[in-house]
Image (cartoon, rainbow, N blue to C red; front, side, top):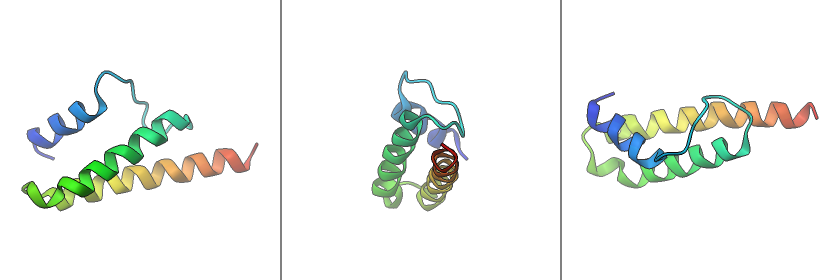
Length: 73
């Protein structure tokens, strides 16, 4: 992923901390928002479809973890 894409994701995440693949609902909500933004801007970025695909994959993995954790409660 290019430097621009990393900066874009960093700017979207802001100062909030993010733990990859945790079961915190705030992380899931943040990934959901990130995926939605990536979907909207994908056509305006070089290789934007790759960024959108990556954001969806992260969101999907997170949703599987959250669903698994909720099922075990």
